[in-house]
Amino acid sequence: MVKFLNSLCRIVSKSMYLMRNNLLILFSLFSLTTHAVGKLNVQGKLATYSMIVSGETTPLWLYAGQEGRWGISGKAPFLGIASFKGDFHVGHNISVCGHLEADYNSKHFGGYLHGYSLGIDWKFLSLKAGRHVFSPVFEHGYKGSGSFLYGSNARPVDRITIGIPEYTKLPGVLRRIEIKGEVSHGFMDDEYRGAVKFHRDVMLHEKYAYMRWDGGKWKPYAGLNHSVLMGGYYSNGEKIPIDFWNSIFAKGSSKLGGGEMTNAAGAHMGLYDIGVYYSNENGEYRFYYQMPFADGSGMKPFFRNRDQIAGLTWTSSKKGLISALTIEWVNTVYQSGKGMPDAYFHYTDENGNVRPFLVVLYQLEDPAFREDVMRKLGVENPGSYTKEEVEKYLKENTNYGYRFGGRDWYMNNGLYPAGWTHYGMVMGSPFILSYSQIAHLEPELGARETYYQLVGDRFRAIHIGAAGDFSDEVSWDLMMSITRNYGSYVHQYTGRYTWVETPSYFFKGGKDQFYGSMGMEWSPSKLNGLSIHGMLGVDVGELSKSLGVSVGLIKQFR
Image 1 (cartoon, helix red, strand yellow):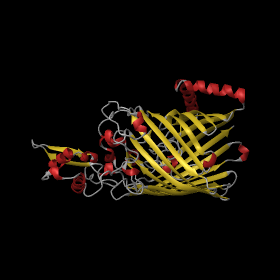
Image 2 (spheres, helix red, strand yellow):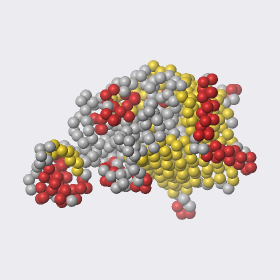
Image 3 (tube, one colour):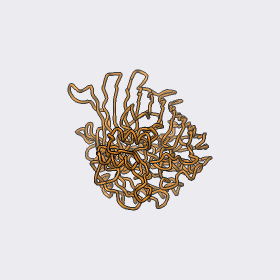
Image 4 (cartoon, helix red, strand yellow):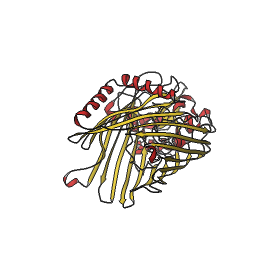
């Protein structure tokens, strides 16, 4: 405890000086303003946790969805948290809020500044800057596995966020229509595992837009979520050029060259989200159907995109034995099919050398290029073939009859070996496996430069989550998940443009796994804001076998 407190003092004093120098000034102005215009409302928390784990890895639901405060490795750390948040109403529909959190993890990170932010709200608009969580997809009471694209599974990123965070009615005759949406731009530079850079000077751009119809009890909605990685460095140390506007609007860029000229600049992930809210005297229900995508082929819903996250969540209008329940199905196995992204083959040149040849399908619009392709394939009368005929020939002879544009790679990208991770934790669904989660089972899977990439993005999962209250002082929550993971197309084959499978591929046929947890929290009224938290986690299956217990003491104050 003494070590934690000493570390905490050093973090706060040093970070408040070094970190974004103007943050100290902003918080000072924040404090001075409160004396002039109103009363400052402050909430604080001091918490200590200890965990004991039996197994190579920590049980999933003991660390997932907790902003990356715990590690995956199975080491049993001590965790200390000191945080506060404050807000006040300035007047003229203006509110100001801020938060600060310093953590200490004895085994993984030591002492560090976990989060900080300062924000201002005016009517329906919000502006926030700092190290904060960006998790817009699900509301309070959701007990599912978490957002597939972004959420609270990894440590927060330094970012600036602006937009309309809550559903807001349009004026006049359009008052039945509600909208919300935000744009967030972040900066990633997470150094992990010694001197290895996961993201060196990489920008993270995220945004979402939703529309909902207010039909009284029934409120159908539709939304689109988008995430982009841009900038950073190539594996050879050269800086990756940034085409900012083409990256955020997913357009090709001559500035980046190569494949980025024909595909969208930067690395992209997206999520369609449709569903409906229903409210009655028992609470609020939400049915949702989501479709993730990584490129243009995946953006064709129900045609090339057969992956989905479907669920039903219920939140009670009052406390009870069961006050929240979520049932969820996740399937990401298809990923536009296992056909190669583009046509690829080898040919023998005039000197007898075997050379590779990549065909991006739009190039077949050029008759001279079509003739060159068919000549390299050794076809007679190459100039007599139409674009459709050449494409059909390539499909049948180089892609085994499969459609081109397949082998999507969710939350991964060749330019960014870490993919959508932050300090080793995936930003989206915790069911997506990192190499560190299965390294003790298959050390060779992460060979080559893919060592730091996510290795299991193709999976099916059934998840049930629930929460409630035994009494006014005792609450509980439950998480249970069954998954089958098929790895990834990129690791299943020895190359992105080959049909040669990796020998004895670890995930061949699928690996089955169960993840479960049960938590309880006792908050005696006589102890004035003090609570005791306990949690049991268990993993059983072909990916991990572990048992863990976490115990925490939390003090909340105002």
